[in-house]
Length: 334
Ligand code: KG4
Ligand code: ZN
Image (cartoon, rainbow, N blue to C red; front, top):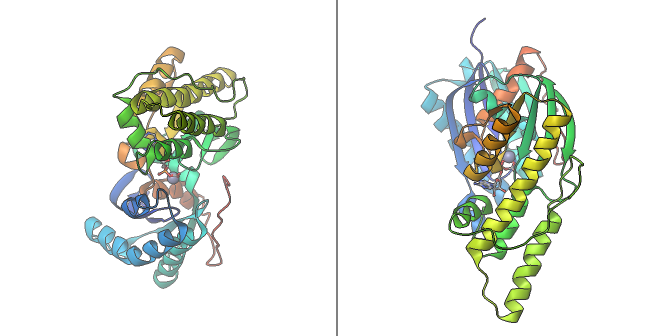
C-alpha cells in the first residue's frame, strides 16, 4: 500500500501544534508552540488568551511544520484535527485552519478526539497490541479504558470530579510552585520524604477515581498551618501528595488488570511524563506480568503527532467529516 501522509492540527488547550505523520506511526515533522509561560502569569490557562494566541500562531506553526518536513500540503492524503474535547475558542481556531486547508487543497477532513489522540501517541512508540488496558492521565481527564481493537473503547472507570493532572496543578498553586504543576511537584518531591498523612481517595474497589477530596485536604492543611504560623515542609508535602495520587492510579489499574485479565497495558496523557509514575507502573507491570508501553516523553503532553496517529485508522476506514464539522467542548470519547 502507498504511504499515507496526514497533516494533523491540535489546538484544544494551550499548545498550538501541527504535525505530519506517515502511516499513523512515523512523525515526519511536529511543531509544538506552547503558551505555558503566558498562562503561568495567571496561575492557569485563561481561555480567551489561549484562543487569541492560537490565532496569532497557527499560520506560523503550519509553515514551520511544512518546512521541517520539506513537504507541501498538496502531498498530504488527509487533514486531521482535534474537534473535542477542550476549550471551545481554542478548538475552533484549529478546526477552522484544518477546514480551510481541506477545502482549498481538496483533501479529506478527519475529526479526532483529543483523549483518543493521547492513547494513540503509543503507536508512535510501537504498534499497540490488542486487547489492552489504557490508563489515561492528563490535566483534564482520568480514565481506565479497555480497548478490544482500534477504536473499540469500553470505559471501565473515570474520575467523578477532578482529573489527576488538575489536582497536581492545584496543589502546585497552593504551594506557590507555579504552572503547570505536575513537573514542579515532581521535582520538589525528589527532595522530600513521605511524612504527611493524607486521605486515600475512593478507598474502595470501584474502578472510578476521585481527586477533589485529596486536593481539598491539602488546601485545608496549608491554610491551617499558615493560620497557626507553622512552617509547611513543602518538599515533604509534595512527596506525600504525589505518592497518594499515584498509588491510587496504580491500585485501580491493578484491580482492572485482574478483573479483565489484561496482558497489555498502556499509559497516556500529560501526567504520564512523570518518571515517578512510570517507575510505579513498571513495577506493577512486572508484578502482574503484563507488557507495558509508555509514549515518548515529547508526545505525553499535548501535541499534533498523536492526532495524526489517531487519524490513521479513521483514514483507512474512510471515516471522513464534512466541512460542517463543529467543535465540542464537552467530555466525550467519540
Ligand atoms: O495531556 P496534557 O498536556 O493536557 C490535557 O489534555 O489535559 O496534560 C497536562 C497535565 C497538567 O495537569 C500537568 O500538570 C500534568 O499533565 N503533568 C504532570 C507532569 N508533567 C505534566 N503531572 C505529573 N508529573 C509530571 N511530570
Ligand atoms: Zn491533552
